[in-house]
Figure 1 (cartoon, rainbow, N blue to C red):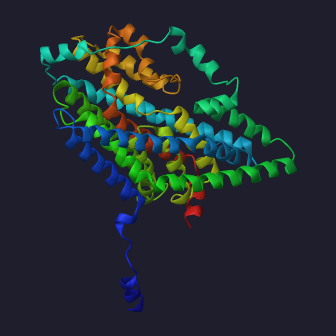
Figure 2 (cartoon, rainbow, N blue to C red):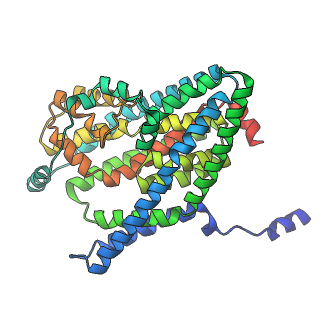
Figure 3 (cartoon, rainbow, N blue to C red):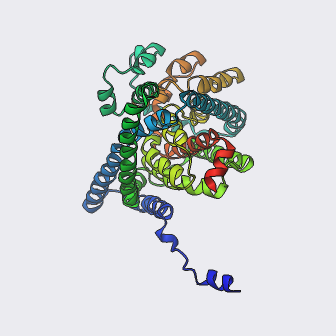
Length: 430
C-alpha cells in the first residue's frame, strides 16, 4: 500500500519540458505560421522583415549544429575503433552495417517499384498545367567527369584532410579518420592510451556542446519551419500535389516499416528506440540534412539506448556519410513522375533498371549540390527520359526532402542498433 501511495506522490514531469516535444512543437508551429503568412497576396514590409530575421536565426542555428559535426565525429571514430582493443572486430561491425544497409536498400527499391507504378497509373494531368510546369524546368548539368566513378573514388582520398574537414565533406574525413584509428590500434600501449584519453575527453566535451545546441533547437526549428512554410504556402495542388503525396506516403510507410523491424527483432525496447530518435528526426526534418542531425543521433544512441562506442562512434557516422535509403524510393517515384509529365511510357524493364540503379549507386553520391539527383542524368538518358525533368525534381524537393531525411535518420539508427550483439544490448540495458 505504501509503495502505491509513494508512486502516486511522485511528481509527473511536464511533457512540455521534454526536448522531443519542444522541437516537434517548434516544427509544427513554424510551418503553420509560415503557411498563414503565405496567404498575403503581396507580403507586407513586416512579413518580409520577419522572414528575413527568421531566415538568419534558422541558418545561424544550422551552422552552429554543423559546426559540431567534424569535431564530434573524428574523436568518436578514433575511440570507437582504436579504443576497442580489437580492430578486426570493428571490421566485422562495418561489414555487418553494410549488410544491413544493402538489405534495407534492396527491400525499399522492390517496395517502391511494385507500389508506385499502379499509383501513378491513376494520375490524369491537365495539359496546360503540365506545360507550365515543364516550362520552368532548368538544370545545370555538371561536367561528365564530375559524375564519374573515377571522380568519386579519387574524391574519397583527400589531398588535404584538414581542408576536407573545413569544407564539410564528411566521407573523406571519415575514411582518413578510420585509417588513423586503425593505425593507432597498432602502436604501443603508452602512446595509444595517451591519444585515446585525449580523444575521449574531446568527444565528451563536444557532446556537452551538442547538448547546448539542441537546447536551443526549438527556436532554430521554429525559425526554419516558418521560412519553409511561407515559401511553400498551401497551394500544392494538381500534379505537384500528387507527386508530394506519393513521395511522402511511401517514405512514411518505409519509416514505419523500420519501426516494425525493431519491434519484431526486439533488439531494444521500441519505446526507447522511438524516444532516442525523436530529437534527431525533428532536427533532420527541420534542417533537411542527415549530417546536421548526426549529433542528435549520437546523443540519443548514447544517453537513451546506451549503445557502445563502435555503434555511436563508428556506425552512425559511417551511415550518415554513405547511406541514403531514400534513394531507393524517390528515384523510382521521380522517374515515374517525369515520365507522366512528359508523356513517356516507362516499361517495366526501365522501372526495374531505375530501382536496381538506386541500390547499386546508393553509396556513391557525388559531393556536389543535388548530387543524388544529378547522378540520375545518365540513367534518364538511357531509359529515354528528358534530363530537364531532373530540374523539376530539384525545384520540388524542399517538402519531400523533410521526409527523405526522416527515413534516412531512422534507418541510420536502426543499422547502428542492429550491429550490436543482442547480449551486449541486454547487458547495457541492465
